[in-house]
Length: 309
Image (cartoon, rainbow, N blue to C red; front, side, top):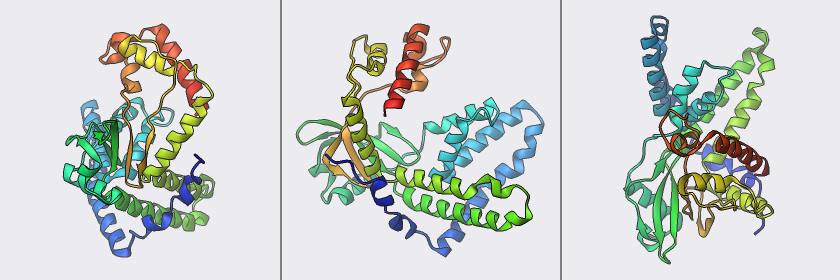
């Protein structure tokens, strides 16, 4: 199949921005101000003791989680920058990568019906009531198609697109205000805030359109079809099962079941890298099965796979 248009015609930004109105922006601003106020007021307590700092970090994570996808994504990015932030802050923010809140099964069924035009029972033989995983933008359910194929059903959270559209609009307004003040504040123009805001908006809009993820999976399959000897799955599945396997495999989108808000793809078992790379004296798959030699091989194979994607 031909690759889909880049970012699917600029991700069709108009529908996302249509969700934004002045009244909603004011309401969203008031909500965020009230949400972050306790964190701001409590921040001086970090100077008192390590215990207060730990409590403040827990409050930071909880606040970002409640603030919505944009705040969570910014927190996740910050967790990967120990060069900019203290290690303790990065460790606390790294918890934003898992344990996100979920939406109801009824909302998942409604999203599937809206996406495919028929009730979910007309598409799936089984659909798990509880998600097998959830992030700040979407959650995943295990399912079986009518033909018996096992699949994963990824569904956007109901309000993720609207909340993100409002937050992106607020970010744009904030950047414009800072740019307007640039002549009065030395060095502001060198921060390139407008470019950073544009890049973040493009990233978020891509996350909010599951057709982009499907397009990426197809691209990965094409790229790795030329290289059937990568060691990544051999290492990963060897850790879990002790069986050799030299093929790189990705979930495959199911034709006709890919929309902006719902993505159906083949089901793939796996381990998170954090569990595989756990310290030898810690908990998780890494501690149990992954010695230093395999850790080095996994790092080399992972780098090769990353460059080939």
